[in-house]
Length: 237
Image 1 (cartoon, rainbow, N blue to C red):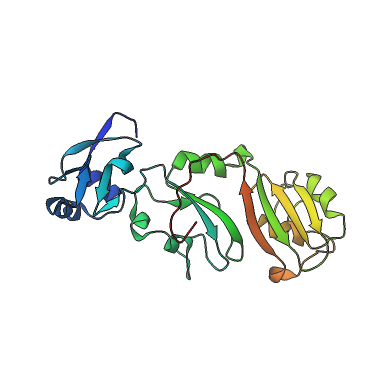
Image 2: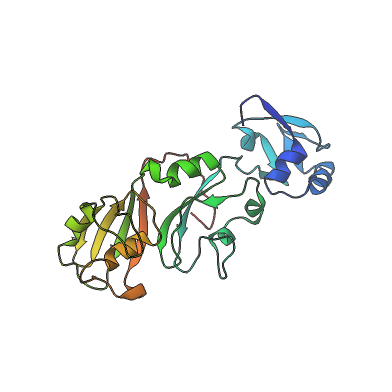
């Protein structure tokens, strides 16, 4: 939103998941919405929307949530799925309830599989999501990998060659960087985001240094070239 844009209070708060417009109207009449230290009793009034609005407005006694353009940095644990629909615990279950009702919706930037833990970004900023997720961006992503079997020393050259083709794929992977920490631990930096890519890369080694799906604990380590002012959220960051 631009610094000079105006919108109705009920429309704004409804899009941010605070409730239906009738709920917002009821909250306003009870004095639960305050802007610049003055109660807004009519939720249909229009207010200026700017970056400092969360500091100027309170809802039910708490500061307004971040406006659209929200980016969440989550330490995703094992066993949690990056999905809106799959069975079991989802990453979205760890967000505040009203954030799950925001429009536009909050989505993960890329995915970490169920058995992968570590840094996960979520946003309602479609442009940012596209810039980071698009293969054309070639954004570097670094993972820390612990393997069930020792590396044999050939993996660094294989991953860097640009000739490794994963089973079921037709196109070779872009070159990746492998930094060995120990015989069973390494950092791997990739610029793509293919399905289960890191696990499949190690499984493609001959002989593979890991065992079936139990082979490794992959932790997202960092996503470079993404600069934001981070907002800590209790329980997820």
